[in-house]
Image 1 (cartoon, helix red, strand yellow):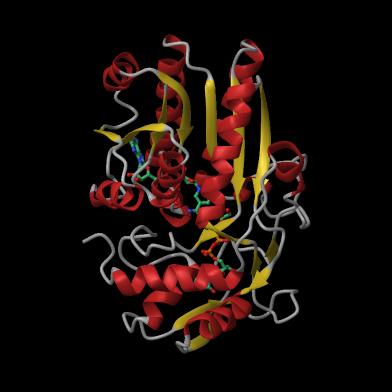
Image 2 (image 1 turned 120 degrees about the vertical axis):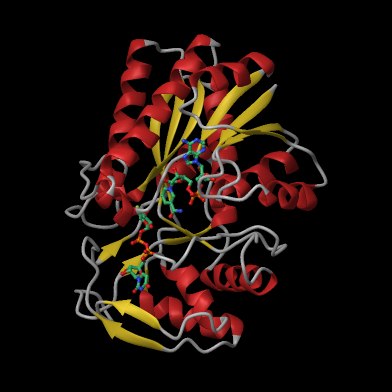
Length: 336
Ligand code: NAD
Ligand code: UFG
């Protein structure tokens, strides 16, 4: 029996493939390489000493997806494939809805057709919107401020309705907080195209001399140092959370949402200081205007994942910084 990983050459998917292979699962990856590189497969196989099966395929390709289920004995699906850039989703909403939602519908129809009803889905803390107070718990009302966030809320609803219609489905909705860092081998990591939108890849590029300085988006938030607070989680901890969720969906039926975060909030300035301490590199920065759509503070109550999945994050902010930096130093141009 194999695990199908959609989006498995991407940032979180590649780290999850390593954990799956290390744990002895057979892994099949479907990815159209729209935001990742085929080289990630070599690196995953190099780290683990194991082989996976790769299909370069768009999950919207129905016949192609049927073929994957026809050719393999699939026990469960971990569904990462999706577009994830918030700003881009505002510019190109139809592309985001088409890719993320239609892609998920085609995947679910293929799963239903082949009787595969176990799924772990990549949701996001963005579904908590702007109005809830941290620490965030899974039962809070959901809302979104951009098309990307709406795709996550809509897909969660589609999956809830699917389970409601057929109680033999088993689905975990994993709401990630802010994944950063890289595998400690330094061989897989985050490989953004162009100018990074997210904090940690921007910091590592400043440290590497590729960018002059960090712009800190807002120092007048209602937080202790005025900069935004987030719950950063090491991508390897996050990957391990998927294996715990996978066990749960294989063993029982139902649908549940879980926060995957550390429960600790760090400000932008905290992250800069932690990075400097962990790596010895100085990060020049300048205070800039707030970024539209950002909130002051967002961190998880991760206790449900601990209670029900037996998972908690193990790595600290210094591990996250050291590992992100090692990936940057070893791969100055990502997978290129
Ligand atoms: P990523 O872009 O690195 O990985 C996504 C992968 O999906 C890429 O390899 C891309 O090529 C592939 N893909 C996209 N559309 C596809 C399609 N139609 N068919 C086949 N493959 C397709 O992103 P990531 O950071 O690894 O995120 C993985 C998932 O987690 C996404 O669904 C994302 O929305 C979600 N998520 C990410 C974050 C984050 O901060 N990184 C936070 C919350 C949720
Ligand atoms: N920030 C800066 N300068 C930068 C980049 C970011 O100051 O150059 C700040 C932001 O204002 C924010 C913090 O650093 O306060 C983190 O920003 P990121 O862009 O790294 O992360 P976000 O919390 O904005 O968003 C991330 C993902 C979203 C996801 C969300 C919740 O990018 O896709 O986490 O899971 F929806």
